[in-house]
Each structure stands twice: as structure tokens, then as C-alpha cells.
Image 1 (tube, rainbow, N blue to C red):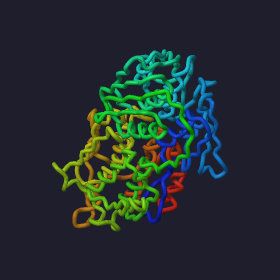
Image 2: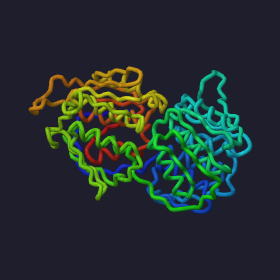
Image 3: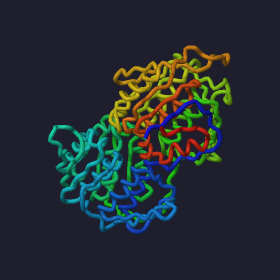
Image 4: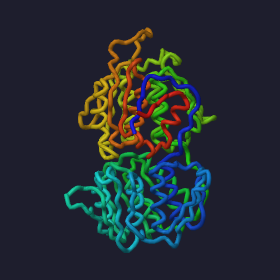
Amino acid sequence: MKIKAFNHNLNGNITVPGSKSHTIRALLLTTLAEGVSHISNPLKSSDCISTANAIKLIGASVDFGQDKDVWTVNGAGSSIHLPTDTVDVGNSGSLLYFMSPIASTFEGKSVFTGDESIQKRPVSHLTDALNQLGAKAYTNRTDGTDAPPITIEGPISNKNTLVTGGELSQYISGIMMASSRLDGTMNIELTNPKETPYLTMTQNWLESFGIPVTVSEDYKHITVKGPVALKARDITIPSDWEAVAFPLIAALVSDSKIVIENVDGSGTQGDDKIVEILKSVDGDINWNKTDNTLTVCGGKLAENNGRLSTENLPGKELHINLSGFPDAICALAVIACFIEGTTVLEDIEVCRKKETDRVKVLEKELTKLGADIKDTGDALIIKGHSPFKADGSENPEFKIHGGQVESYLDHRVSMSLACMGLGLKEGQEIIVNDAECCVVSFPHFFESMNKIGAEFTEV
């Protein structure tokens, strides 16, 4: 599906879906639990459906209900077992990295695979960790590629301290979940922990099920004590901050005023830092933590005519360390093109190991649209311009224009580039190829945005 995006203003209220990160954790932990759990406000995306299908292979079942707003999980509990078939994770890296360690706690062999994108993701960090813990984990590739399908022969144990990098948090979270099934204490030493808010999220989830967990202040030392017999519980999934980013930047690049409802104020999602970041460059954003709403004004409806600028920052540059919330790179790279001054997105190595090498993809596709953007290896440097001067007049230095771009089947690339089109000059348009991939994390994204005036059009 190709989507056309062009200059349009937004008005009204929008609610983003539940968190993918929370939903997948909820499905796996209620699978480990004994009894029936209810999950309210789950994210009804392809990744979460893949998880619901996968847990059936280890003894759980899911009833989506008529309205699908509450999912009922009949946990496997004490009857949990080795996967009865190859686990197809679809496009979900989280499912791959979370469930494979759980499968490795059983004696026997399990196989994990996924779609074309998953079969390009490096997995040596995962297989090396499982091998340290006593499993035999290896890829099934004949071409020498470090990517799925992978085979795991368990069981693992916690007799050895796991020493691993931790640049990707997902496989660490998976090992933490799996450790709840092992007898004794799992000791995990991380030499270079990244994406640390997600480790805290996993810690909070495990503790909510009664699993003893310790995480050091620097995240380099983690312990999990087991075994723990998990009991079913009812859960409400908070809204997804990774999804909030897209209507947020869309409003800021256009003459818009929107209210994003049901915003999660718990502090468990690292991506909420985007509010502080964009306010630092004069983004007109009001987060009402009592009403759980985010009011965003852009362009002529905002203070300073919606002009975003780094001029009041130290060194007159915006530096953002993305190690804690790397999935924000797509939205931040796009909005940086509309910020007067230089934006530096730092500590981005993990962004190369997602659905695509997002650093290279953003450099290539944004360059097509007139952006001054450079991949320096450890940073992405964007020299942007506001469409407006300080006096509100048109800025001739603003060079962003229309064009045809690729999503690379990456949901966050697709949504960010579509939102960029709303800030173009009149007569310009962006065509996003393979835009339907947004269903991975934000089902009905284009329909939801069109309800507040985006006018995204299928071509």
C-alpha cells in the first residue's frame, strides 16, 4: 500500500493504542501463571497476535472476546511445556528474544523463525548468552548469516553467572522471565547495558507477579530468584509512548491543535522523554498528568508561531542520547528537520539492529526529501531549519520537499515519514511505499490520524 501525505492541519482528540512492550510481557507472564488472567486495553497489533499464537505452543490459550478490548489468557502454569512446533514470531523481535529463553528452560529442542525482516536480525548476543547458561543454541543458516531460524537445545541453568554486553535489552528481559522457572538465583552481569528503561519495565512486571528481582543502579548487575509459581491476575495495559510520538510530531510540524488522550504517566516507558526534549526547543506541549492528556499546538496555533529552535540550548545544539529509548529515533529524526539548528542523535548503535538499520535508512530517505543529515557511525547529525523565521515570516533556508520514499517494511519509518508530509509547503507531497507495515505497532494508524484531519490518502 502506498500512502500520500501532504500539507494538512490537525484538530481534535486522538487516543493511541496500548503499549506493545507491555502487552507482550503481559501475554508471556500470564502464560507462565496458573489460572485465568484478563488483559484490558491490549495492543491489537500483528506482533501481539503473533505472541498470542505462539503461547499456544507452550500450553496457554487466548480468547480475544467479541470486542477484543479484553483478552482472556488461560495460563499454562504447571502444565507449561516445550513448544510443540516451530515458533513463528512474525515480525516481532520482542517475541523472539522473550520466548526463546523461556523455551530453553525445557529439556529438548525448539526452533524459532520469523518473517523476512526477522531473518535478517543478528542473534549472536542471544545464542551466546544461552550457550553460557548451558544450552546449545545456534542458527540454522547455511549462508553463514547470524540470523534466524535458530535452534535451542535446553535446558539452561543458573549455575554460571551470565556475562554479556546488554546493548539490546530484549534478550536480557527474556532471560529474566525465564529465570523465574529455575531453581536458585540467576546472576546477570552486563558490560554495556542499553535500553535500560525496558529492563526496569521487566523488573516491575516480574515483581508484580511476586518474583524477587534486583537491578543495580548502573544496570550492570541483575539477579532473579526462582522458582516462583506465578498466579493469574487481571492487568490493564497503559498507552504506548512509542505511538504517542507520531501524532505529537505531526501536530508540531503543521498548524494544528490536538489532544492525545489516555497518556501513560507511570514513568515506566522511556519514550516519554520526547516531551521534555521537544519542549526544550520551544515545542508548545502541555502534559496534564491529572487528566492523562497531552495537548500539542503547532504552527500558527502555537506560541512563537510554532518555531522550533536550538538557540536557547547549551552550544546552540540539541544532543539526545538514545540509548534508553532508541525506538524514538524515527520520530526525532523527522522533527529535527523542522528545528532551527543542529540536532545530534547519539548512542545509536542499537538502532541498527531493529527492523532495519534505522540509521542508514533515515539518512537515505530523509536526504531524498531535502534534509541535511549525516550518519557519522555513532551519531546521526541533522542540520534543520524551521519553516519560519523568528519574526514569523517564511524562512528561505527551509528546504524540505516532497518525494517518494521507502518504508523498508519498518512500521516506525512508515509512520514518521507520513507525518513529515503534513509539514510540507503547499503543492508538495510525500509518497510512502509499503506503508501498511504500521499495523505492527499502531493498527489503523492512518484511519486514526485522518479522523483528526491528516487526510492521508491511499494511492
